[in-house]
Length: 138
Figure 1 (cartoon, rainbow, N blue to C red):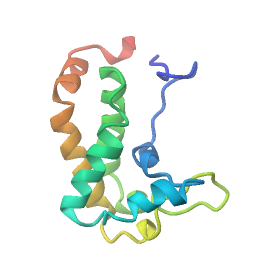
Figure 2: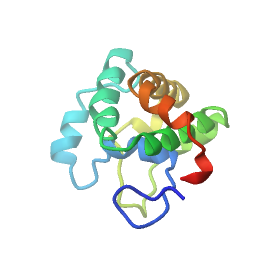
Figure 3: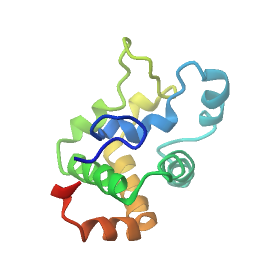
């Protein structure tokens, strides 16, 4: 079983993990202000957001962890669009908060498709390496 890279628990990534770099909870004045300069619906801004807050954030993962995380994203993109929008909704009982207005994103699927597209290029070698192994041995 593939274990979490930093904890002694099984690795079970979820779609919301892709948004972790955008969590401004208790950082509204710093990260929140920085993210307010971007429009996640603008293609150019989205590319910058993905590279700076997703690609960079996951750069320390092993090729196996990247493969599993990428698989979760692919499965989500093949699922219901409403599930993708749900990830952006704020849970008032959570210690997590996305930037203002992100919960009203018009096309959350395109946001995640863009992540998928960029990661498939950036992680091409890691994804290939992992695909050559027997996942059941992880």
